[in-house]
Image (cartoon, rainbow over all chains, first blue to last red; front, side, top):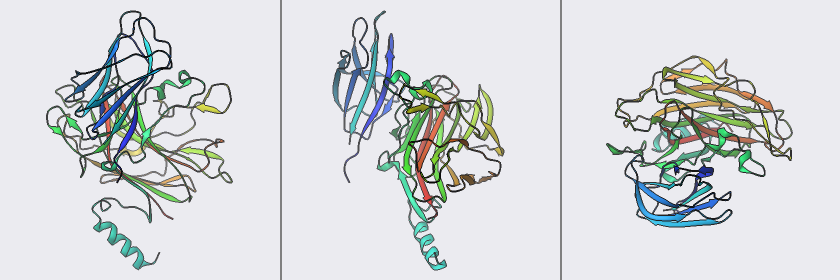
Amino acid sequence: MLPENITAILARNERWEGAAATEPFEAGWAREAVLFVRSLKAPEGTKPALRVQISPDGMHWLDEGATVEVPAEGEVAAVRLTHFGNWLRLAGEFDAGSAATLLVTLHLKA
Amino acid sequence: MTDQTEAIRQGMLLADPQLSRFDPMRRIICHDDFSRGHCGWSQLVGNYEGSLDTMLPGYAQHTSAMLSTLAHWDAGSHGGYDSSYALKIATRPRPGAQNVAIKRLTMRHRGPIRFEAYVTYKPEATELRLGDNDVRSWGFLFDLQGGDQVAKRRVMPHLRFLNADQGETLRKWQYKPGQTQFTDIGSEKKTASHYHLSPDGWQDLPGGDQLMCFNEIATKVNWHYMCFDFDLDAMRPLAFRVNDREFDVSGFESIEIPAMPNLWNMLNFAFFVETDAAKRAFLYIDSVCISGDF
């Protein structure tokens, strides 16, 4: 049987400002992940580094260490991940007056 | 089918550990065991044209279903019915939030079909309390339209278990009759959208009160059997069973709207879940068996 792989959309056309994060995603079956971020509209203000986060339970989160920049409108940024346990999400802190409208895509592979 | 052929078929089903807990009709259309992946159950994305901003808010909130081991903070992975994995549909953490997973097929025969599944539901365990009224509802729907030579209408049977609303304990099955409001999407007159899972229009299924095994803390779950039979020719329900209960569907009505130009022979199945509290609601689906009498 071919190894499982899927593409999940964690955020679609979501406007992120202040403290923002994707919904938690369970990916324990996957050995590797790539998180893609595309800006659907021109980012406003300063562009924070978005932080990959992991969790023991989907409720308590800590930074995994990897980050990905908010890309310019229409452009895509990505971060590659392994050893993330089960739970994954992407989080960001936007300064006052800053915002981004994002498509966040997670590719998982067994 | 002769009596002997049927006896052999039944014997083979009963001896198969994967199928023995289902009662499929003659032909198995699909048997989705989520230890083998997502099995074609995907996110229900809303219609749009030109910009994603045209998507109705009810759809914009939807996210992708995931493969879950029902991992809990206090007891670790609960696991599925007989494998590690189940399909998990999760809402966002605000009252009234909903999420949906859908499987899209087309029909090759308009006759009786049977939709069986093992499912369970829980709120996110963010509090040290049971939270038995934190899931507002969960349920399933079909989205159906007959062939291009015959169909005059699109038919959408909906059934939901209304567990609670605004904190009030309800525990009853409901269906959704009538029509829903369509909104044109974009300017090309090719796409419209309607949020058929909106809170309005649900009716109580007569005799549809049911108490379920919810267990005693937020992280203990029990799997429930459900089975809905529907005739794709008459576009009428035939039977509805959940665990040991059989419900009268003689008064059941579906959402019915005029046939649409791009949906001929559509045979879609969807599960949905809705939260009543400011916490995520989860619907877990261990396995699904869809079969037909053809």
